[in-house]
Amino acid sequence: MKLPELYPLRFRPQLIEKVWGGDQLAALFGKKAKGNIGESWEISGVEGHVSVVDKGVFEGRSLTEILELYGSELLGNQVVERFGNDFPLLFKFIDAREDLSVQLHPNDAIAAERHNSFGKTEMWYILHAEENARLILGFDREMDRETYETYLSEGKITEILGETEVKKGDAFFIAPGTVHAIGAGVVLAEIQQTSDITYRIFDWNRPGIDGKMRELHTQLALDVIDFQNTNAKLRFMETTNEPSEICTSAYFSTQLLQLTKPLQKNLEALDSFLVYMCVEGTATIAAMGHSEKIKKGDTMLLPACATHLSIATEGATLLEVYVPVAL
Image 1 (cartoon, one colour):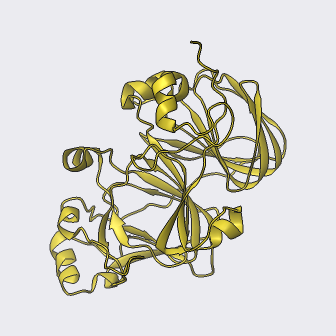
Image 2: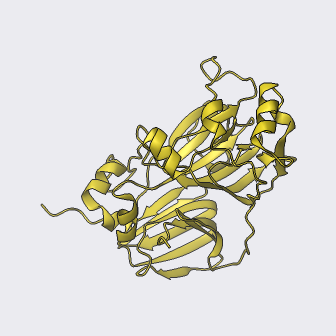
Image 3: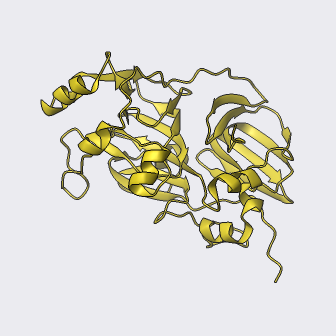
């Protein structure tokens, strides 16, 4: 039986309640969220949280099912060579009404050995920040394991954490091992490896949604922490009507598109799927014989077999993400 042709895919957001979550995903993006929603998982291949297609002939089908049918047509040949038919990236919008736990993530080698998982390299693009909002990134002084363990054992870890004020449009790269936390009053887009492995080292002595204290991972974290000074903030040039490179890592390349006029793109040499996260305005993306309108807070996946696309804009700002060819 001949398979249906692929087309630009939209998925049903998975809205996840968090003890630190708020109401900004509904207020800013129109997400159908009730309660303290901390995360909207936009596209996910994480087991137990696999995305489901929202419309078209694949409506109701999971991302995993589509990957099994189409493989490299969806992902790209070089992506399949590296990651098999596992979708390699996870896309989220996050609303922090309160501070998140202080945490870090393992790299590929440690995550594979301990959890049979990818590691977790991630980046953040700030969409909203209240006055004096900040992130926790690394430490506020030169640090070593002995000093860290002393402060931790004495319940004084907050005295050594580094803080960085943020504003809308800032971007940060969070490498594995980086101690970090999103601070209260921040809404952001997160692009990361497909992984849900987090080592919490401090949670503000706060119970979770169920009223119980959430697990800390003090010992697991010790040989993963990067004690060097963290310079996570990304510096990039903002341009109009052409891609501005925010960040390129081994796992993802993220461009900022601020559009005031239509944009045409030839994708024949890319060999990767593309994901667009709309962070301002509205855009209409036409490709593969289909046209899809996305607004602020929407996310769309364009299969790797697409050769061309055009974007019409109504004040749109987009994050454009793909998997770069491994060096």
